[in-house]
Amino acid sequence: MRAQLREEEELIDGSTAPEGQDKDQRDGPHRDPGGERPSASDPADEPADSTEPEAPEDVLRCERDEYLALAQRAQADFENYRKRAAREAAAAGARAKSGIVNELLPVLDNLERALASAGEQEDHLAGGVRLVRSELISVLSRNGVEQFDPSGQPFDPVHHEAISMREQEGSDPGVVLDVVEKGYRLGDDSVLRPARVVVST
Image 1 (tube, helix red, strand yellow):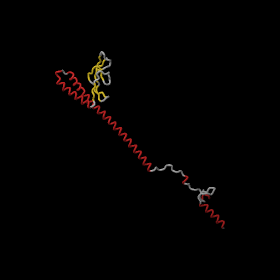
Image 2 (cartoon, one colour):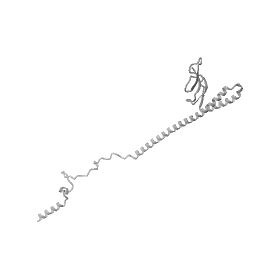
Image 3 (cartoon, helix red, strand yellow):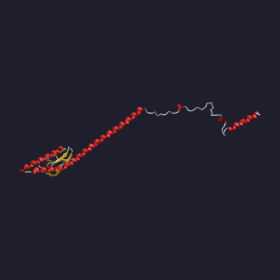
Image 4 (cartoon, helix red, strand yellow):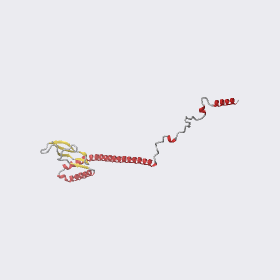
């Protein structure tokens, strides 16, 4: 009777286990042959994060360097703009000045022709014309305009304009013999009007 009860208990225990699950799975976690229970992974064995947070001093230093470089670039850009604006303003002033001077040069030429053609009996009028001419030349000189007379100099196509050529005994070829109209320049390089000359052949 006891043996029959034991067999029935074993049958009941076996029927409560899920289908396909053997006794080892019912007994709990699987044990390896050595009998040791598998242990959880050790945090020390996991790879550590290689990126370390930057110190606040390093962050502030980097920001300072960035702002300093930005300020230096802005200062350099402003300095270049200031120089370019100054050059453009000077060039615009020179163009405006040369335009006014070119309008005045024919007036000065007429005053010089009047003085050249004045006779002795017209000397009282020539004195007034001579004074006006002198004042006009002074105004041009104060504004950087210089008058030049190339008589006797070698012909220079940059500063001279040959209107005719003439053979002159005792003169080398290519020399300015006569000046029909004097030349004018602004500064040392800018020629407002070349001198109109007669050149020897």
